[in-house]
Image (tube, rainbow, N blue to C red; front, side, top):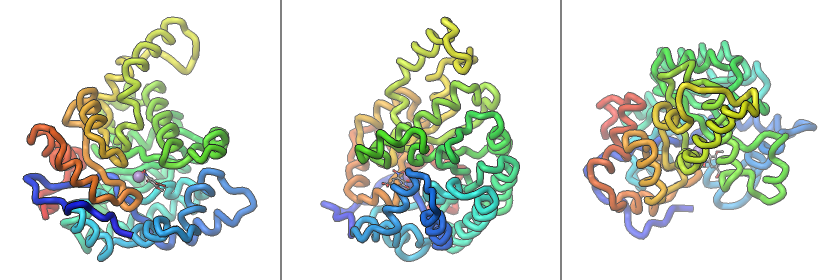
Length: 357
Ligand code: 1DF
Ligand code: MN
């Protein structure tokens, strides 16, 4: 399957840095197979990876081939789609569906595999470190190792872990580590947890079409309302998929948050130092993964500022050369377009000059 372009991407006066790109060590598939064969399986995981790992469809087979490759296939696709640099993360749900011990050790293994790939292609790949929220202490240590020893430029988490959200203070040493290292955390989607997924599944809406966005937007909002950013004011969270729709919600979130605080309706909705939308502007960066849509990009730039909106392809799940061409052609001033494709990513992920291909 190829992303048949109407015309190939042209030479452009900016680098194209794609910031939500996935990989999967083939060893992770062995662990996933065991989890999928257990008597009780998380329904979202079964729906997502149960599908990709067993479907004979051309799309699933193609995605599986691309996911496990950190060499020729990936570089060829990057060349064909005009992507100069991929910022790569362990694919969702990563280690978060594993038991604690397996998750802790496999996060290390996966980070080593990615670091090896980056060593082979230092001009083309930038890495995010995976970690196991199941053990916040080990997670913080692995983020430190990933950044300090493996040269990773961010950390990645795939939304909930066994139904738990990082708004719970028991996870906050993860944020403490990221803030201290000055690396962003990419809050990537996962399928909704078991106690939420039913009505999504029966309608076939639990995956990337909608359930991902509802689950991950909820997670980001929980971070805001729980006071994570009052406690860690420098922390930067990256959201894909145009901010999982939160920019569109900004006005109502501000109004209803203030009204709810005033009426003391919920213990969980407490006064914050700033409005919810202020945290979106100060503590989030937003990528357009899966949303190659100029109007949505322009709206988001308007809400959070053009320094905080970045390009992402979501390779290999949305390997679409036409979308690169469409985004190159956006009616956006050249300075803003270069920020979007290149310089915002270079600044946020601290991508060095050597990555210029
Ligand atoms: C899908 C989409 C799968 C995204 C992903 O990881 C993923 C999909 C398993 O289409 O099933 O990262 N995405 O971010 O949109
Ligand atoms: Mn993705």
